[in-house]
Length: 118
Length: 114
Image 1 (cartoon, rainbow over the protein chains, first blue to last red):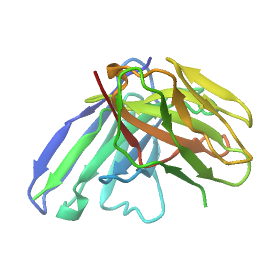
Image 2: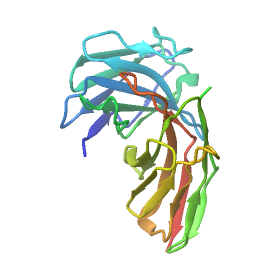
Image 3: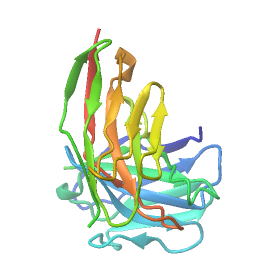
Image 4: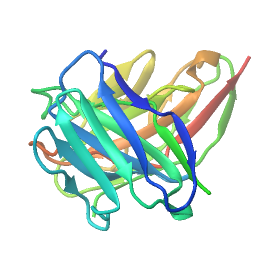
């Protein structure tokens, strides 16, 4: 199956700094990527949908100035957590959909990136 | 609103035991239903899916039947193996189109002991 890779897999940063997480589709072109956030013992919550070459669509309650998403190419989307605070500590997961996959329901997921803000 | 409820884990079984992980959903209309699996250190992978009532999804010995009357999509396997140890997520997708949003349950950790 298709492969999606995230980097870094874990990161620790100081409060107030910014952190960038990359999501790459390794063997296919992804016109659409999704970013999720998962708290311990909770479900994955969709944060935003990013489409290549256009602005991301954020879910209600997600601060777009806090979580900057860029999808500049068909194989790379980035999530930047700006001015991170301890409450931003979480597990961030990206997924990507192949072109033409809109109605199949199958997404390909990255391994996740665990962010810890001190 | 749309939601998915899964049984809390962890579920600990001996090898060759029968597995059931319960999943119920709340949604308007006719959602598609999915089970995803996440093995240690890996991303979520689609395990099986069903797109309409009474459909049965199956893969790798796992099965789940879309039950509209009980709004359920329970995951079953007749004989689990140690290699099945993972986190299992039930999910629904309502409607089609470009957004393709998935709504996930909280995940259930399965630990199979030899």
